[in-house]
Amino acid sequence: MKKILFIIALLFLVGCTSSDNSLTNDITGNVVAYDAPSNVKVTVKLQGSVMDPSEITVKQGSLVLLEIIDLDNATDVFVVNGYNVEEKLVNGEGLFYFKANKKGAFTYGLRTDKRKGTLVVN
Image (cartoon, rainbow, N blue to C red):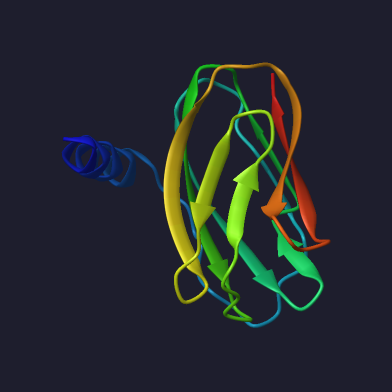
């Protein structure tokens, strides 16, 4: 049942969002910000010592879909602290969602990695 709900939510998010999240081999650590509660899809790319985006800002109440792509192909667990979100990467990739229902600043990144980003919920 959880898989069915996940697929429905994923299809809804993909249909309701638009962004250019094309892969490149030269990522730089951008900041992504959304100013209204909504369905938000963000692709987080990791390569070398860089995490892109390094900051994600969303409104409280947003449903956030994170696509994780580790171009170095790490096998690790991606976490969003403060939300008890953990997703094991398979072949350097992961996909999960959560509701941003707590205001504040929360770190995200690979559990065993120094690269960290910040999720800001307003």
